[in-house]
Image (cartoon, rainbow, N blue to C red; front, side, top):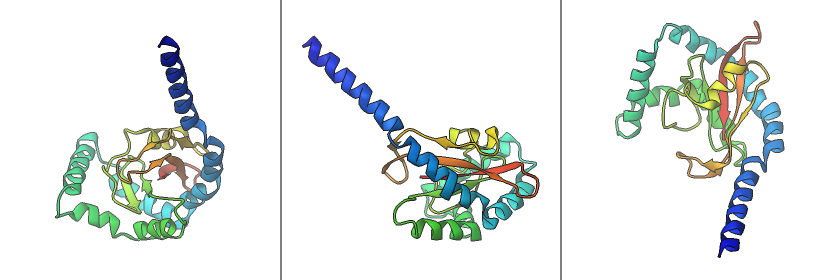
Length: 183
């Protein structure tokens, strides 16, 4: 019985490690090509710059208030804040990319310098991403950084997938101004 337990534990450990790293190389290639291309698009950089101007004075209390509103709207029929984002030009652009990706992307969203959603191809579960690795490991680490999550079941898509995020860089200054996350 002890041997069976050890074999099962070893198998579970190897499955977990394989799941976490099995697609690392392919996801890095995807990040440095297609997702970086999305992040560099003028539609993305212009929308992030505009929202950064609007949100630059937001403190954590304001961010938490907006996130609470978003989360309550996600479970409601009345969704003015969510629809304002989903109906903007950037969200349309991201939805078009997702639709033409032949299933490669199940979600794409763009975050500003505060970690707030700027545009998205589908509804996210929350509005503020600034407390999560997808934003911290890209926006906070500078140009060329990449965040690749472990394989996990996504809450909103219910698919086993990895999140891949890259920073949005201002083409004029070279500064990181936001981030793009895809799954």
